[in-house]
Structure formats: C-alpha cells, structure tokens
Image 1 (cartoon, rainbow, N blue to C red):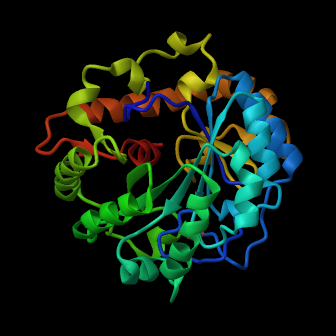
Image 2: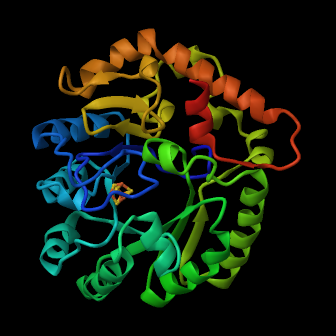
Length: 332
Ligand code: SF4
C-alpha cells in the first residue's frame, strides 16, 4: 500500500503536451502551441514493461490526453498487459464518437473541475471552459463510462468545495478527488504561494470528512494528503528501510507513481523530478533496459531522499497533513 493509503501501483503517462487550453496551474506547461508527443510504439513498449514490473494502473494525463491520436490503442494495450486505466481530461473534447472509441478500455474518466464556473474559467484561462465541459456531461452519462471529477485545492478555493461536491453528485460522478495545487511548471510562474498551507490542508481534511459522510454510498470523496500520524506506523510504505530490502522487489513496489514525461524521460514520483534521479529516456532504450542501471546507480540515492523526507515528517509538528510527493521532489 502506498503512502496516501492507495493500493495502486501507478505508471503515470503524459503522452502529449498538446492541449486546447493553457491553464494557469498546468504543471506540464501544456498548450495549443506545443506538438511534443510520444510515438505509440514507445508507449506500447513502455506499457508491456510496466506490466512485467507489476504496475497495475496506467494513468494518462496532461497535456490533454484526448488529443493524443492513439489514446484508444494505448488504453487497449494497458488492458492487454494487466493494467487498469484512467484518463484525466479537461472534458471539453469528449465527443460521443471519442467516448465510444475509449469506453471498452477506459476504467475511469477523471474530469477536471476547479470550482464554480467563474473560478474554473479563471484557473483555465478560458472564457467558457466550464460551459463546454458541462455540455459534454450528458454524452458521458449516455455512454455508460464510469467517471469522476478532480478538484485542484488552492489556498483560496476551499469554500467552493461544497458546491463542487454537490455538482459532481448531481451529475452522477462516482468519485470526487481533491488534489492540492503543486507549484510546478506554469503554476510556479503564475500561482506562486497559492498551494494550500498546513492550516488550509487541515481545514480541508475536516471538510472532506464531512463530505465523505454526506456522500457515503453514492460518491467516493478522496483527499490526496498524507497524515503524519499514520506514517509513523507504516515505515515500509515510506521506503524508509535500507536499499538492500528492495533488491529483489519489482519496480512497482519501489517507485509509484512512475512518471513518463512527454519527451520520453522517465522519473520517479513527480512530474519534473530532479534529473539526477531519472531512469533515462525511452527514446534511447525501453524501460526494461533502463531499470538495471537505475537500480545499481540511482536507487540508493532515491531511497535516501525518501528516507530523509520521512524522517523530517516524524519531527513534532502542530498540524498533521502534508502532500508527500512534492515534498520528496523538493528534497531530491
Ligand atoms: S492543466 Fe490540463 S487542461 Fe490545463 S493546460 Fe495543462 S494539460 Fe491542458
């Protein structure tokens, strides 16, 4: 089980940086002007290798994955290799034709929703991102696709979470995921200081607990934060043991999520993770050939970063909730 309680071993793919939007909080700096994208042959080989390393979930993310021409083929390949699939989308391009192509191999469609219409559009730097997305929801429901929403929590929008939850439930969502803003990429440039601090995170925890009770049995509500009090009793989940403990483990037990960036670089845990810890580029070699060298030369350093982060979190603190993955990335 991972540090935030999830039971998934995730390979997170960013097959393209193309996007119809240019959101203020975009960690991959995606947008309409970029053409960077991975060839399907590289994606399919990566998915085969990820299945062999015991990953069990392929999560396709931004750029806007629905603009990746071979998304349906990539999802089918993930299923063929034993991985469940999710796609995170801004929801604006979900035509019924596209949904029909995806639905046999897509287990969960996660649609971004950042607050009431005005807030959503402001975050998305768009005059009508909310309205276009909302118009697509009828088609999503008709397709039978299982879907949920992802809300980016900032220092300033917790008061909109109740509205977001009510909207999501009314639309028939099975999941509302609350993910704290990470100041990476474009968010570091234009939203510096907007990620939730420890007080905001703690209030968010209470609000999410209330929403979990309200929507129990109809919609799962999940907050992507780590409770310092819980990690003290699960050090193995925090990779805090010696490197030798992990020598014979499949990669999925050591690195989750494994991130595949649109330029083919593979890094642990977090988009943009320090390149000193990178596996290398899929343009040079497939994942199965990058892993032995990473295990020998880089795994000890990566585990050392995890261990130092874990030990810092055990120190006494007034408030318990933290965002584990960017914390590790900051210390790398
Ligand atoms: S956050 Fe998502 S929708 Fe917005 S620009 Fe980035 S990839 Fe596109």
